[in-house]
Amino acid sequence: MPSPPKTPHAIWYDDATSLAQATRWSQQLGLPLTRDDALPEAQPLLVFHQGRLELHLGKPRHKGGVFAEFSARKTHAIQRQEGKNGLLARAIGLRKHPTPRVLDATAGLGQDGFLLACHGCRVQLCERSTIIAALLEDGLERGLADPETAPILKERMQLHAGDAGEFMRQKTGSDPVDVVYLDPMFTKSNHAALAKKEMQWLRLLVGQDEDAPHLLDTAIAHARRRVVVKRSLKAPVLGGRTPHCSIQGTTIRYDVYLPETPT
Ligand SMILES: C[S@@+](CC[C@H](N)C(=O)[O-])C[C@H]1O[C@@H](n2cnc3c(N)ncnc32)[C@H](O)[C@@H]1O
Image 1 (cartoon, rainbow, N blue to C red):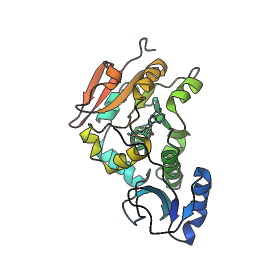
Image 2: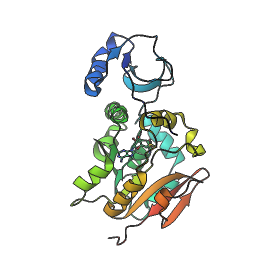
Image 3: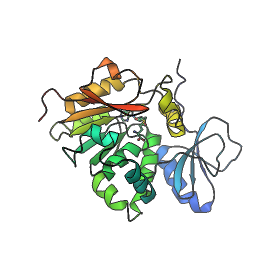
């Protein structure tokens, strides 16, 4: 039986220089501010320190928080690791269509979305957890202050805090996206993905995205060119739906679904 999702109980901040920003997030998210160090273990906590919003578990610590990052350092790491021939780039179909409009319907911390934006895609991020959307919003604001990443974020990344299924039904009827990308939260049996701390902590907040098969149906009905679903290598196909093809790596694969009548 999966444990129910948990919500951060407060926002902790380190000193007076963080107070204004901590207050802003406290008001936006409806969470109380605290500077108490004796906080319950294993409870999610938001922390504002060192100029950024982070998710922590238990006591606030100076290191080890989870946060969204869209920095030049990250851009260089992406360029080193994943050229246009990387798995995700191939799954999205960048060789044939180098600058598609991509809906990253399960944005999380925006790492895959940022990779796609660095490759030239115009990315709409959708995140329905208000806490994770706040981490994204904070990361995007910091990224906009970085001269190297600001143009990528300004021109190619937009955040919508809300449900992607609703978003597709409301917005893309007359203005469809080329590619919908889905990376739903793993289940406990998905050991490859469990290795990453970020995803384990986000999973505490959002649970298991049990409605992902339904989101896939909506995505297939709305994407102009394709839908790409990230899975761990051995995981069953999402919702029992057979993909058109799969691009496989050593621990993950991308299942590619084509709309019935591609345009
Ligand atoms: C595994 S994480 C995605 C990680 C992301 N690919 C990254 O690179 O950081 C899945 C995220 O999708 C979000 N999500 C799941 N279903 C959603 C939906 N219908 N609409 C918007 N967000 C959704 C969850 O709240 C969670 O934050």
